[in-house]
Amino acid sequence: MKAIGVIPARYGSTRFPGKPLALIHNKPMIQHVYEQVSKSKELDLVVVATDHELIKAAVESFGGKAVLTSADHETGSDRIAEVASKIEGDFYVNIQGDEPLIKAELIDSLVQAAKESPESVVTAKTEIHSEEDIDNPNVVKVVTNQSGSALYFSRSAIPFNRAKKEHTYYKHLGIYLYPKEILKEFVNLPQSSLEEVEMLEQLRLLENGFDIKVVETNYEVVGVDTPEDIQKVEEILGGLKQYV
Image (cartoon, rainbow, N blue to C red; front, side, top):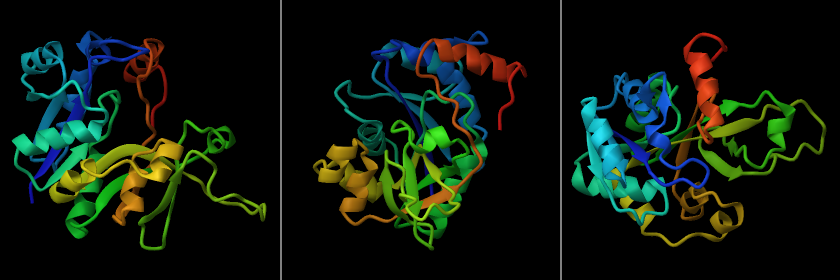
């Protein structure tokens, strides 16, 4: 089974235009992501899917592979589906292009889970340690069944702890592995009602009956959303801040 790692990298960003090319320790962020992902032992190929020639040129300048995709895609999943139509594979892993500290071990765990459940989408969760994050709508929560499949994703605190018992909450991480046929079907489905309400596209999969396996990890996301986040990543890379 051939697994393709795809890193969507869009040039336009309301808060941070040209974000994939922002320099972190004198290397563009997309290079940091690419190099981290390339450490994966389970991926057969790593490719950047971008809408801009400057990003494509930057990736090729450090020896990476990039595919120019449509500027009209609304989501990373749509961009990955275009890559899937051009590059043959069995699984496609959607890897965020703004996480320069992404761990290859996390990617490997998703591919390994997919090989055990080839008819499922696979994603990841990590334990929430902050009470503030439990109630933060920007931190997406997930609950799973006893087989490790997702029951629901929400911006709300799920489950609601009416009993006031000690409970572990989990944050959903925005990394997905799609079997090729499911990816093709998914991007052609209309937005679902829950997806529109929560503004979470993974709910479209659940509402249409797809199984989503959720692997647990201790990986803590350090994403770059604004120019100010660059300094935080540089401090971690320089050993000035601790990183899990």
